[in-house]
Length: 144
Image (cartoon, rainbow, N blue to C red; front, side, top):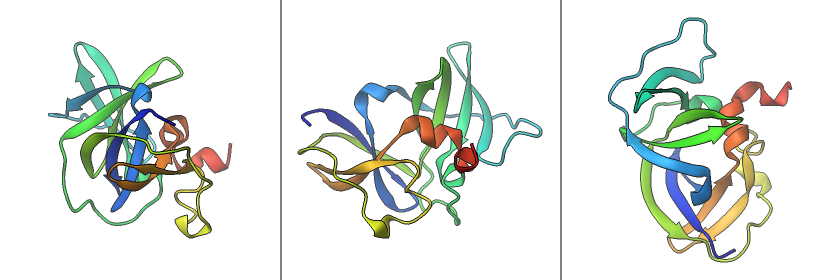
């Protein structure tokens, strides 16, 4: 795999997204809560007159705790024709993948297993390669 990855941190763990899955990185300046939305939906934000659903990645993975670093930058992705901004602990860098993804280890844990495409070695070290659609689906993806 000789592709580029967006390296982030979620729940203290390095998490990588394929660069082609990311349409942009934005600064979130305001999130409007949505009544009765699932817990992992932080709310709505605007991007050039377009509404984005903001997904809290920690809650979508059912991870506890609060982020150590509050990054206002958020990757923007499209799933099923809808735009989503992903709240992550930190956006690090765009890095090159080194090799192909390998199966996720059993020690990855139940929170990460449904969204992990595998482990990927990068020029910055190993990271979980995240399936964007599975992350956006949130914790109920197992029930679907």
